[in-house]
Length: 182
Image (cartoon, rainbow, N blue to C red; front, side, top):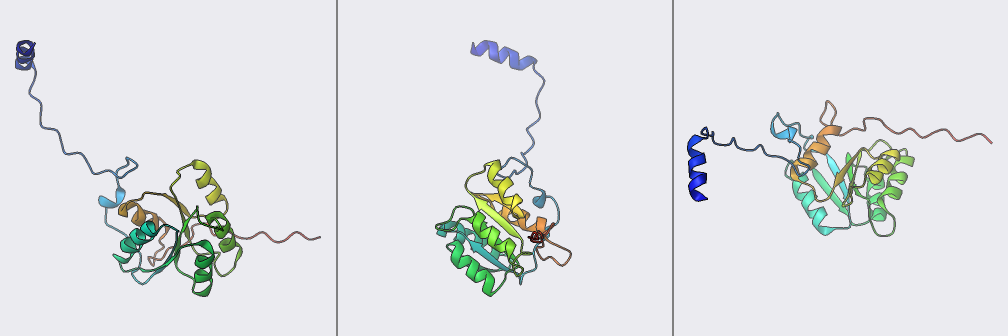
């Protein structure tokens, strides 16, 4: 059999060495951020991360601080909401699964309050179900990021929300409907 394979190789056209594969992100897509100039958020921005995982909080803090962002951490929705209400940030990363109040309930509170309604929120979840993304966007999430995430994905999510001044803004701010007259 080896002799037959050697004979075949004599008659085959030589093949060129394979081109190096492009770097891809975890979703299998070519990362746009690596092939074009980066658009980073202004370095003085304030970010709040609301997640009960110390690992996720540490990772996000390290990633965000690497470009000069001011990061505050809350381990649950109640403390996160108190932090946001006392000193509104420029962007919030909000986990969906939290002890006591979940991320969807916290997002509803944020969207109903005039002080926090316009703050962009990126929801985070280990579950990539489309229903979570749909429900999150229906109640006012600006983006959705699945765990585990890469540094590249974090920057791309932020970049999608940046305005001309490099500040995250909601693309379609949620307006609360007027109460029904009774």
